Every structure is written in C-alpha cells, then in structure tokens.
Image 1 (cartoon, rainbow over the protein chains, first blue to last red):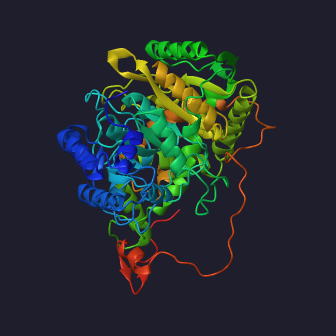
Image 2 (image 1 turned 60 degrees about the horizontal axis):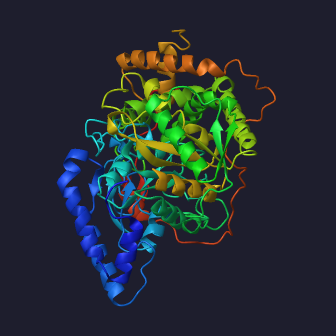
Image 3 (image 1 turned 90 degrees about the vertical axis):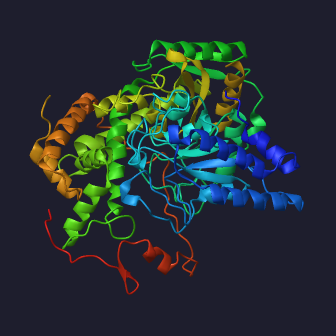
Length: 474
Length: 100
C-alpha cells in the first residue's frame, strides 16, 4: 500500500470543508507534471477541465450543497470509455481524434457522485494485450520500476493510481485486464459480476466478457467505487435488473466461518514467489477464522483455449464497425471495399489484426464447429466446474498473475507467451463471475504480488470481506 | 508445427475481415496463427457431444420499450465525427472493388 490519499479520505475532507477540491486536484496534477513523461499513464490529461470542475465543486460545497460520495476525488478513465466531446481513442490510430457524442453510463454516474476527471488512460489497443505494449501511442511504464511493464490492458489506469496521478481509476476487464495490471502495479483491482456495471459507452471488445471496474489504493475505495458504478441500466441489454449492492458496509465483518477454496488442480505456470504469497494469504485467512477447503476445477486448464477463440471471435464482429464510414479515420480510395481494407490495415495495430483474423477464422464456414462452437462448450464445462466448487466454498483464492511485472519486450516475440499471462484471470470472465486482486506482499525484485479472490455470481459481499482481511494482513 | 492453416487460408481470412495485408505479413500471421491453433488443439479430444454451448453468462431476454419518440443523438454532431458527410448523410466512395 502506498502513501497516497484514498478516495474515501479525500471525499470526506472535501465534503467537510477541511480541504478544497481545488487543492486536491493541484496536488494530483503536480504529480502528473513530475512523472507523467516517464510513466506515460495517459493518452490525454484534462487539466483545465479538472480545475474548472474542482472550482465548481468548491463553490457548491461553500453553498452547503452535498456534491456526492466522491466529492473532489480525482479519477482517471481508461481511454475506451466514451466521454462526450473529449477524445476517446482506445489507443488506436483508427479512432485518433474521435470525440464521442455521448457519455458512458459510468462516466455520468461518477460525475453525479462529485468526482473530478483528470484524464484518459493508455491501454493495449482496443484492450487487447497484457502489458500495454500494444498501444499505438507508446507503452505505459510501471511506476514502481520503469524498466518493467504495468500489465494490461488497463495498464494506464493501474499506473495512474500507483503513481498518485489519480486517487482511483476505472478500467475494463475482458480476460484479466483490470486484475493483472492491479497485481503488477501493487494496487487493488476489481472485475465485478458480468452485468453488474453498465457497459453502455464502453467501446466493445468481447461483449459477453467485458466488464468495467475500479482500481484503487484501498479495498474500501474499491467497494465505494463499485457501489457507485453498479446498478441496472436500461441502455445495456445485459445489465442485471437489480439495485447496486451495499459493499462498504460489509468491510470489517471478518471471515469467521467462511470457506475459502484452494484449487487442488491449479494449472501450472505460476512462479514460486507468487505461490509463496498465495500460501501466506491462506494462512492469514485461516488465522482470521476462515476454513480452507480444497476444490477441483478440472476444466480450468482449457480456459485459455476457450477464451482465445471466443474473445477474438466476438472482437472480429465488434471491430467490423471501424470501416472509415461513420467515425474515426479513413484512407481514401476509389471504391468502397478498397477503402474499408486500406483504412483497417492502416488504422489497426498488429495484435488487433491478429485477433480479428483469428476470430474471423474461428467463425468461418467449415471451422465454426471445430473452433468457436467447441470453445462455447468448454466455456460451459468451466462454468459447471465453478458451480460445483462453490457448493463447498464461499470464495476461491488463486494467484492473479503467474509472475510479477516483467521487463519490456520479455513477452512480445511470441503472442502465445503473452496470452499465458491471463491463465488465472480468464476463467472468471468466461463464467461471468466477480473477482478482484489485492496486493499481498512482494516477490522477485521486490515487485508487488497480487492475490486473486474469486466469487460466484453476485458474490461481491463475500469477496470484499475476504479482501478487507487480506489487506489488513498484508 | 502442424500446418493447420496455409498462407492461402490467411489471405482469404484477411479479405473476409477487410484487412489489406502484405504478402510478408501473410507469411508471418500464418506462422503465428498456426502456432496458436496448435496450442488450441488441447480441446480436440474432449467429449463435448452432450454439452450445451454457453454464449453468455446469463440467459438474455430481448429488451423492448414503448414505441414513442425519445431524445436521441444530434444528427449534425454524429455526422461531424464522420470522415466525410454530405446533405445529412455519410458519404462513401462507390461500392465495388475486390470482394469475396
């Protein structure tokens, strides 16, 4: 845990008048000024808008208004969330300069809660990657060691919080893109239950897997942010028609009597330093009164294959919209098909093209059953495995990432090597369950290690209870 | 490497995906995608005949609303974001060209 102020304390101080929103914003902008050139967490820093917003909040507070539970909290948004009139690029050349005509639902919710937006954060292009090295605008560096990656795809959002550029941030998680960078940067990262947070205005990658969630310094901040952005949204047809859960209130209730699952057949691949921290987490939870139970997830080892067929298949369909017609950039040509093909060739980076082709292939006539169809069945097996495991356990603990943050270029030669970074995070997305990463000590090179807490559908309460205990034991 | 797919397959997929890629890139992508398909063969021998495919975490129901006029995006603002627009519409080059 770092020494930066939490969103909870900032909101309390600003609302009570102990601190002005303007001074909070200045403090964060100053840190951005000092280190952003080195870290490159942002595609865009909205200093002027942030200052204007803070002044407005201060004026309203001076008039005795309640401006909301995030009063004056500086927040950064992953640059795949639509912000009206503010460029939203997905770190892709194809969308460079595009200004959305509407806000994502999460953006409206945070604004209504009194937050101050400080900028749009860097990501692997269209959220495809695990290191933020795939951004068309250059990589983000890990603030804890700038020779290493911050993880990805929400690397900018994780780095922005870890560097103290924003008190909290939002990312999106399709296969681990919040949890893995959170682990690598030593912050808390949450992927809520699929459908708990509206995806309206989140630029789609793989629609049956994508979910928005927070990064923060503390578990309490993550609970607060999740509460604020959750809840039914008629603009998202996959939104769960239930009110947002109450999560801050469950923190501190402890884990007495809870059953914590340990995966007996955990896929291989995690480094010893990471596994040592996982063991220490089990010990801490047992000491706090929980019972450790062994669970089996035999299909977990097939999750990588299922994910890397399903996600690219959905992406190949979702990214068909970038054709140079309605938004983004166009390469001029004399006929429409050439214009499409040239525009997309110039606008998309290597990894995006690779996944579009993989997905197109998996969906094509003659191969659909062998690849996409089969992957959907494996997805069912994984979901069934989890259902059986959760009959005996309230939550399951695994590593978040198999390794600590790795050096730049270490995994860029072979795409598959990079994909293996997601081995422990993707099963949750396939099942649609919630999961979060909590920093739990350090491993090799003194870099942070994250422990991942997995819970069943809408099991956020149990997940946050465990997270709070791990945080205090870390 | 098992050569699960050929350069011709990749060239065809690129055409279907509307991606104009060079011959050198076709070679490179063929090798990379072939390697991935090799790895993905781990599910080939699973017994899946009786397993229901899972497309979504939860069953979906179609979302409908009353057929009444509601506020929507501003036409000029939307067209303003397009690479080319004319007379209130998106402007595109004539259809045609290479197709599959």
